[in-house]
Length: 137
Length: 137
Length: 137
Length: 137
Image (cartoon, rainbow over all chains, first blue to last red; front, side, top):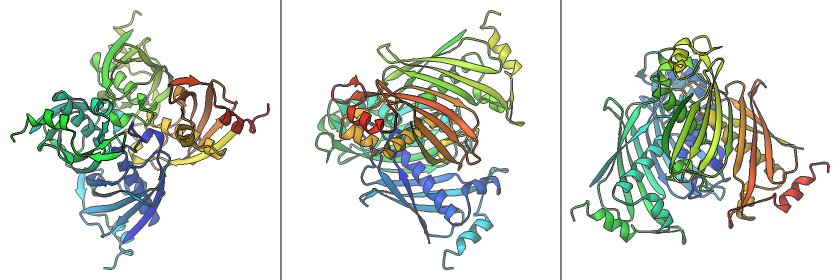
């Protein structure tokens, strides 16, 4: 299992007129969460695209909103990878506010696609190898 | 059951560097879909907030992404309300591209909150009445 | 001179906690305005990119905000092209609310770039021809 | 004069299909820049709103785009306040990429508005005092 925490401060432009972080903007926070988790193991999403020619479209997202996040709050995004990826890679998230209370939880699943052929492929070997050291197999 | 269709053209600023409509931006499309469904039965979300003092935070969202939407595509957002709301109001969505192919499907659940007291309340009576004529009860 | 009007309804997710359309989101409205102006003369921005291999990065933007736009307002985006483009193409905008009052005015200048060479080029001939019929020369 | 630097990493969802940070998204970066500049002198924008009942709508923005910012680049937002505010408060910005090259420059002017009365007011005294120590007067 790989876990990673990253902090994001809510921008004014991300709030809505309820004064809440708009429900659709969490998707960017999850994106940052997984990009930083991947970076923490020595790979970057940018390199996956540019050097390996692979892109990772999202195939599903589930969010349970518990309480609102507000402007200027410094949120903690806890991202985790519980299983070695195969056809898919699945990230689990919990976002906490400054008081340590749960804002929401989410699961985002992505697949791998060869940019040149536009075809889906399984998890690239180099990524699997890099990740496997974090899992008991 | 209430169904409603609305069209949204994908903006350049909504795409990402994959050339896809960014996966987080669909939340705005669903928001427009339910606002227009509600408008079609003679109420506006704006009036619910301003005249009735009620806001509707999202409590959960599930999206299954099937194929990408691309810049300048005129998407059809099919929104439906399958049940009379009670503690929650649940919208189902399907988005289709210009070729009539399914882009994604989603379920978004919202609750009702009294703006003055910041407390959750069940579906307001006037909204239930307005909607009930569309359901066999 | 070419003028074009298009309507955009303000989305909830585009407002901020002041209850205003967030000041940064107008850039998307201007983008839609010029895309629709270009479409009205028989070209699409999508085709400029895909068929002609040209992209159009923005080189400057000036906005004067007069009054706020609010959730659910149906805004009128008035876009105009006052001069035939040469090295640059410059769009002028005025946005009006439902009461016909000016929300803001803006000027956005773009250049042309060959996608293959990543070099700036002057206005493509086919675009100049298509546009020139609207200008006294 | 007050100067402040803050870093922002470009999110995937902020890019467009050119592979550039979308031109409209810089407005959020400037917003973060001035919020952090204000925080550096001991005030928060959140407190200005909540404790003093004042909001600060943007009245004009001028941006000159020099070169694109790309996904995952860690940008440096240099924000400065060159003059003590009076009727307006004007921020100047320069954004640099990781190579230290200028991405763009901007000027954003805001006014002060009493939230209760919805009327424009001059710079609040407490803010002027807090800022004046940074200026030779």
